[in-house]
Image 1 (tube, rainbow, N blue to C red):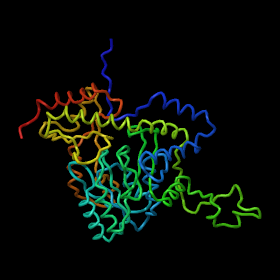
Image 2: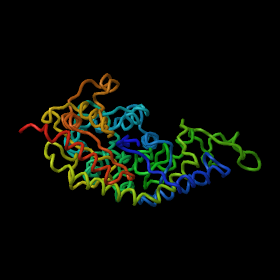
Image 3: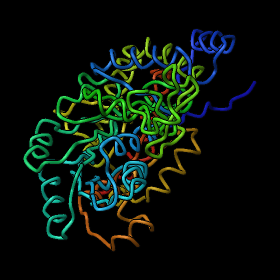
Image 4: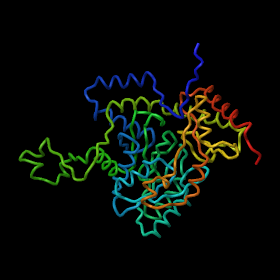
Length: 400
């Protein structure tokens, strides 16, 4: 009889038979790329998050890039990005030609705070940069103080783009009450999965229209907007084959077959979210004996989507490096990850903007570790992770 232990990754998709049926049905349809399921998915997604408009695309990175393009960021502009985030948040700004100003974050949550945003604005102004936008990141699923950030943005005439890739399912995230747009990911480890995919939401119809055009090569088919009248029209009216590209765009489309999966997954979003909350509550209770040397990376007052269950660990007090801890857990069949290496340390950004000291981001990074969290994880799985941590750390904790 096998005694092999099932490996627990830090995150994974939850695919059921109805998801497979939905995809199989789409495969039997006439259109695999852009078809009716794209609009249905967009409408259902907008309804789920309380948005006026949703624009589906092929990744969360694409959603961020489309948002930056829709705002017309470009050379001569700058955007503020918290250093504690994935590469895509800053890269989407640079892909427009705009510059990035890195903001520090709260050392216990990794979130952009109002004070950190004001500090970054002050540094940008002192450097002679023209800040047009800021991209607060709802790290791990925790929601930034959007009301306060929005007030600062209005006072300074800048736009906010929410990087909400971790926060799908949290009430009001995506409705853009305090931002111009919000961007989501439907990567397999996120709240719902489409394989790869992303969605931009906004209350602004013009921004949604621009995002849709940029995701499809910049292609325009509206006769009222055609500029080359000689080619666009004949005596009978608009030529039926005609289109124009007035601005360069990209192929960021999300295919019908993946929207079929997304529609099926959206029906489970509330259930998935409730399960993530249950698992997080279990971790809170089971890991409490290791506090404060090991504790959750959050403030209890902050709304949370529980994309990740991140902990903060005083590795020195336990007498182990983070790499040693991760290796020991992996030997027990438990996967972990680090979210994220602060972007101001990445060689590309260090070369472009020089060495920077952002103490909050560095302090958070030095202690963070993400534990397995996904809807299909069982109570036994959570107990296994907690028991392994207690066994690993319990006898190693040094006196404070």
